[in-house]
Length: 280
Image 1 (cartoon, rainbow, N blue to C red):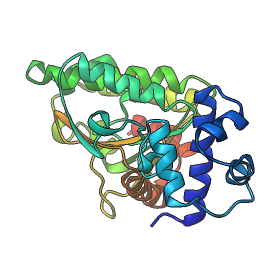
Image 2: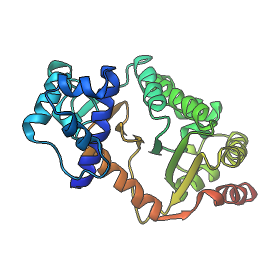
Image 3: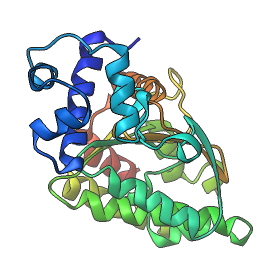
């Protein structure tokens, strides 16, 4: 459940956002919203631990065309009525449209922590040869979306202000290195080049990008990405389930936190782990 003090803090932040968006002075904003200046000052005070009365929240939402859920931090979008974004959306793999949307999600999350569980290796670490192998023409739409996401993530991870974490099982990386499972017919030279590429990038990108590896015999995770507090997208093969509600995003975040707690290979150990696989 959401803590009351956290709701009060979110309400204060979003009230400040409304004031900024209105381009009014605080006195004029208060008058337009039907509030006393002293009441507005109290609501904006960091020492305040109470929400305003229900009618005040409803009046603010109506006056500035935002939802009550958005004001209280229960939704990340501020549209109303027919324009409101559902708490759960299904995004299918429409080429170009999906690519652009994924790229936009990643860019919108700059300044927040992005956390993701890849389908195999982290997309931003893959070589073109591995992408070409992993996605044939029959899944070109999916391939385009994943490649676009990887390129955007790599571009952003090279910025000092970006913050990204990834979690996979160490067994999945071992299977790639050894040419097992779906990697069985991928030539050894390509797999080796991919490992060398990964080794260089995990050193270059650290600490903006941190890769945790857990024991796949102990925990399991389906592919998903958490774009800061903005949204969570669970990948189900050719489609994404996109969660926009604060509570859904918190659930995914708690799951990711558990993956990190279970990690047996830490980000600063990844290069050595890859070196071990290269030496096998």
